[in-house]
Amino acid sequence: MSEVLAPASPLSNRLLALTESATIAMAKKARELAAQGVDVISLSFGEPDFQTPQYIKDAAKKAIDDGFTFYTPVPGTLELRQAICGKLLKENDLSYQPNNIVVSTGAKQALANALLSLVNPGDEVIVFSPYWVSYEEMVKLAEGVPVPLVGALENDYKATAAQLEAAITPRTKLILYSSPCNPTGAVFSKEELGEIAAVLARHPHVYALADEIYEYINFVGEHYSLARFAEIKDRVITVNGFSKGYAMTGWRLGYLAARADIAAACDKLQGQITSGTCSIAQKAGAAALRGGHGSAEEMVAAYRRRRDLVLAIAQDIPGLVTPTPSGAFYVFPDVSAFFGRTAPDGQVIRNASDLALYLLSDAHVAAVSGDAFGAPQCMRFSTAAADDKLVEAFQRIKRSLAKL
Image 1 (cartoon, rainbow, N blue to C red):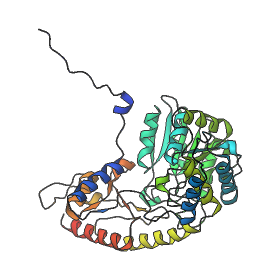
Image 2 (image 1 turned 135 degrees about the vertical axis):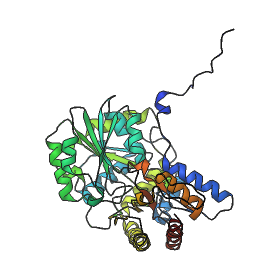
Image 3 (image 1 turned 45 degrees about the vertical axis):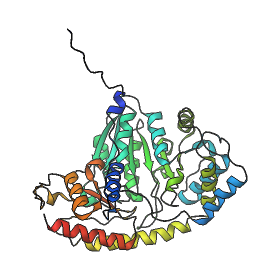
Image 4 (image 1 turned 90 degrees about the vertical axis):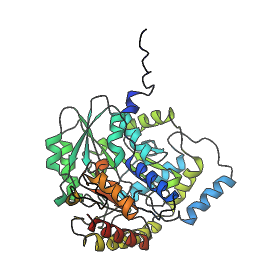
């Protein structure tokens, strides 16, 4: 009698190769523990704890009352795309027309649109590391080959132009980075970006995908866009959105700006997946841009204060090496000094993932291992939480780490 074999998984190879988002996975563990009655402080998610400004919510309510509830053009309403063009010109010195803009269901979709529109199987994508958790997986989804370019801690984790020059090959299609950076909070200066632009100018087959979603959360001065360097502007795709600067995470509204043929490709792709994003959210986004970013400036003051509160404790914890972030709302310490130590229950802390689980069980603080960000020696803690929660969380962390 022949042996009956179990059926193979029906799932596609591309899905089987995809890794679950580490931030979402840790948030899930924290919620499960909290559901058991444990007082968990979650510092795993990059989500502002501020409410969306009232004038933006009012615009959304008006849109509903006015019956603005029908499909919109795939790349977004003309009103919103014109407002984005105005913002880019006024704040970033970048001149675009509405046909250069594609509005998406979050900046995350804008990034995916760009990668899926540009990357062919086997193309190399240089990803500045540490990087946001989804970058590498998105490249894989596009059947590209992610090539991490690791920045040194001594340079605030920022990759250099010299490193980039050495990493480019004939198969390199584009570079991908964020500034201000998630997870490190590092900000590329005008001078550093100028050096990167000079490298790209020497390699006309290489494009750049610049994630600027944390643009407004900057503690060190002017935000500078890579696309401002005229010699490479046509090869730069700039991604931004409303989630961080306007506390609009749940509204799912982002956009990209690119030369017309690339924008048209993203429009074409999006038209077969989601079409235009929520009409109400787009009305809210247009109102947000008309209102400027005064609310973001208030949030930045709070984030700077929270950063300093956390650093005052974290930099006093023996073994933690915690650089000072220049933007975003994270701290990203090197925790490798704790590897090989033993927890009170006898568990050996082998890596940052073990340490994250230990802190969740012992300190009841949720954070994310640096593995997911391309930095296995680090951990990411979000500072987008109330001051008292942050102080309590890091005092707990200090006590728990002292037990190892």
